[in-house]
Image (cartoon, rainbow, N blue to C red; front, side, top):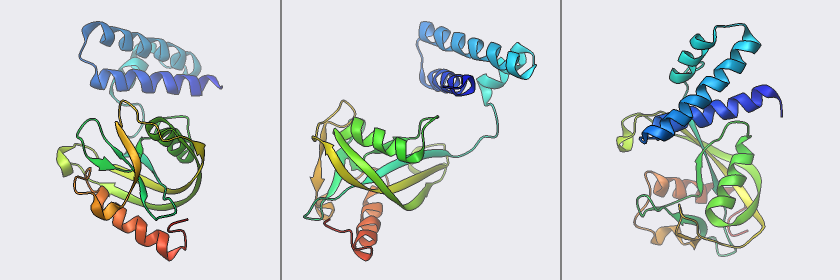
Length: 199
């Protein structure tokens, strides 16, 4: 791993932690990670360490939309692989925010493995969906990359984030997460047009 890849990972962990963590002691730990990363960035760039640390505490680089990745998997009956979320009890596609240092395809594989226990091959991009700030009471612009996937192994296994996982007839689901209902209808139509439905 290149030192900049390591620093990017440390920076991402620290900034995410400071954004969500309320516990004083944990925040001190994340601040320490920021300072350590700043020291190495300063050595590599020639900038002042404290200036780098201040930039890291805000946002290093241009503020861009958040990126999420989700996987679309069907069984032979044409049912969709869906998860029931532990945070709101609603159904949606397995996926989540992308982590740094991974390709979109790597992120999809990781999310599906963590949330459902299945291993998949990521085949092709279906579409990029957008959620704007204020929609669903969230503050960000979010781009959601949805990929068609094929199961290659694993066993359906719930997780602490997804207490229920399985293949479902999407027309029978009534409690959806955000816009996942309309996205389900879209991807089913896409799969049919591509000859992938029920495959």
